Length: 335
Image (cartoon, rainbow, N blue to C red; front, side, top):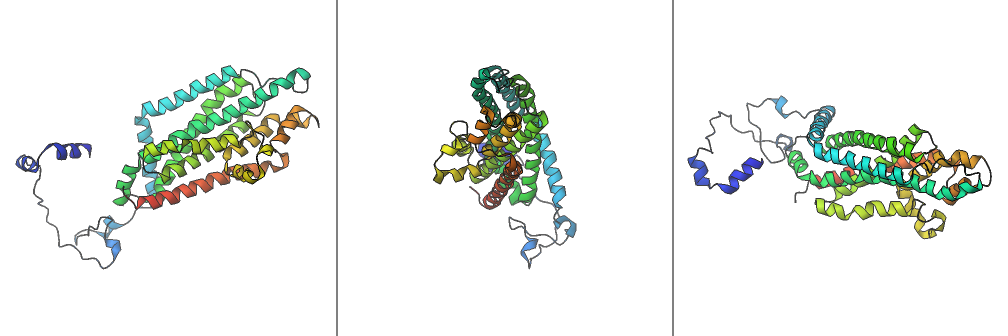
């Protein structure tokens, strides 16, 4: 396609005709069918011919489309070595930096007086790991949808596939890459910081938070048409998450009329689940200790743990469905 555009822009029609660029169509086609129903027309209004079998007009199955699109995603990422490599290299660098700054702050006994001062550092390290997992996975997703929009519109307009298979194939690839990225992040930070929770439990929390964050990024990416405009939405993606996480300001100090926004922020529930996983045993050891005060200040309740998980994945489903609806709507509009 790029070569065709280059030739069309640099050569005159007379020169192309002289060079034999426009070869005559020697195909012996039957007269075109005059369709009575719009199903015989493709999206460009082209009709079938009498010698075309019905099999050529049958729509392929959903799983076939998803399978072929997923294979294309694999090929695309295998060829995009610099982009994928930079993504993981940045994750390794930032994870190592966080691990060095917060080295072994998690190995403390908060029942002792000398351990009180380090509680905030331990909490800060945990929040930084959560924020890194959210930033590192959501940002590439936000920028990728607008960048690949022209290809999607061209293929969708010619009935190569429908919106849902395309959306599902992207979801499968994003889920795999996100899991690998979160695994690399935690293999470095978890042991360097000295977190006390179960590794796989914390991995599940990080993964749920990352997938919910990418769902918001997908929705915003599907809503815009220009990659440059997508970068303008980055503060909208991250700033509210930070404000309602409970680290910079306690959630019980946020004005009552504004607290409802925390229920739309995945980091709020990811942080609550992480607090229970990291400080739950410490809080259960005594009725009055810094860990219990930390959980109380962030409105964390052990009995509501299943609710936190449910809301976290409900946000993922909700924002993904909103992204699908926006993509379907935008698919009928060319810029």
